[in-house]
Image (spheres, rainbow, N blue to C red):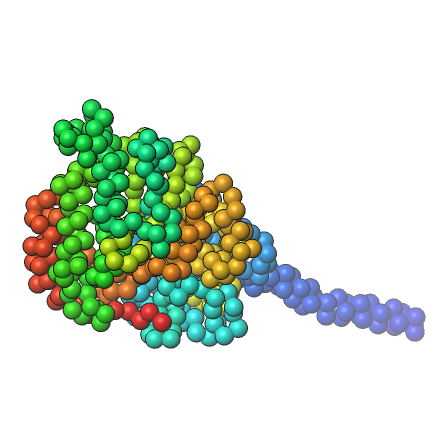
Amino acid sequence: MKSRLAIALLLLAILLNACSNGPSAEQSSSNAAAKPNETVNLKFMYWGSNEEKKAVDGMIKSFNDSHPGIKVTGEQVPGDYNTKMNTLMASNELPDVAYLPDSLASLWGEEGKLLDFTPYLKDNASLQNRLPLSFYYSAPGKPVGNATAAEVMVIYYNKDLFKEANLELPPAEASKAWTWDQFLEAAKKLTKDKNGKNATDPGFDPQNVVQYGFSFSTDRSSWGPLLASNGADITDASGTKYTMDSPEAVQVFQSLQDLIFKYHVSPNLTQQQNLPNNNILLQTKKVAMVIDGTWSLLDMSQTKMNYGMGVLPKFKEPKTMYISGASIIFSTTKHPKEAMEFYQFHNNPEQVDLYKIGLWMPVETQYYTEQDKIDSWTKNDAHPPEFKTAAIDYTLNNTVVSPSASLKNYPAINAKLAPALDLIFTNKKPAKEVLSDLKQEIEPLLSGKYPDK
């Protein structure tokens, strides 16, 4: 009897033990299922070419592999990026981290829609050590993002055409920048008609030009640095008074108009619209020199052309313009700490090969000042020897920020500015008349400048 009772008690104990183990097993299963839920998911939105997408995909994979607690999903946005972002903003479906056009980054930063970087700066050298012009601010002293990459405007040229014309190559050092007259003289000698005469020769036929000396776009990237070089700007320092009717500004735009219609060394606006990309223009010897951004080094380096880089011609002071999109973290992110980890990773030259292939320049200052860091992204076939002075030193010492990033309400201002400037670039009116008439259209739109530090 005692034996049966002992067996019964033993079975009961086993049953109770089994029952008591049930919840633990379930909990264990629950814990296993919870692990994926513990992973922080981030969304990164960006634009760019297929080459950039390839590099970004590799960067994201590298980040995800090295950060097991965070999973980033990238989305490349084709077409109208601004419309896409405004739609996502309206529907409250913003990504965590994204590229933004500079004007939108400045506007949304001021409106509090971007994450304030201030709490992250103190203990983070990679955020502190960035080019001053790369920062966007919501208010003085409150950064909300940086340029994705540093990009400035330079001259690219076909060396063979300079050799054929027996001309010295454009200067690659800002201190030796051509004056406007020196530049114009070179452009004339590099412009050829169908009979082989250049623009300085008697009998030169401007109606049958087969090779232009210089080509430029009609947006801020071309005229912006030249205005700065001549001490001119769209507005005064406060951003509330129109100053583009100054003699210095008129001189710049009249000089550009003269390149096309007086000296015939640049294609006109209609011709430009039908021309291929600058690397093709130079390679096919349609043009000898172009003004373009440092990002075009990727395209130039992939040609078999004998090309070079130089600094822009100057009026008074050698100047170039910092033109770049922004990278930001939206204030709506639920994971600011993890988003900041990815943010610092996404444009780290040690993680992204877009620097080595010539598309991007770093935003961290050490990549401009420390030789081993400079070598890490420029010691390769994509970067010509003159890159150090024509791009790196030029960026550090001779750069002004684009009005699209600094001037409030720039999209509305540019909507008036661009069609008016086309009157200059199509020779409908002289520069002085156009810039004078613009005052009544631009000044009511002026509302100041964004903080720059």
